Length: 160
Image (cartoon, rainbow, N blue to C red):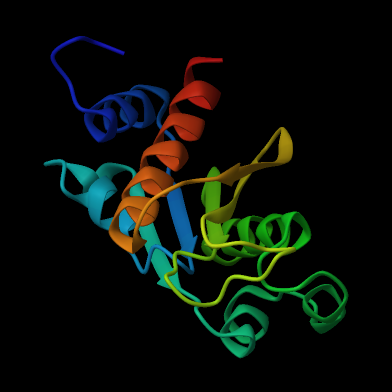
């Protein structure tokens, strides 16, 4: 990453240089990742689409997340993040599909799945990876930090 560029600018430069396109499937960030990807001028070269799939129904209908995955593991899980990332990549035909599912708070947390728990899935031609995080802070901070982590995950893949 260049010292003079923001994280989203670095990702934009790398996507463009590699001729790759990306699509997003977001839950707890509500489109913040897609916003940041499209804040960069020229984003039509690499950004195909983004969907906000907040409800389980939308995850199933729009992304093809199996109902069994949601029942067995919950919406906030590595399994759901993987299915979301694969689903958006398949749906859009992009080189990269990225997903975010988590609990931004301040409500919705449980002892097993506390506020700040986030899973980010990355689907590429090389397969699917999921990273788990437990971010501290209020809702806005969790969402911002999550979008930072997603951009960093994309950047590392592209540099990798």
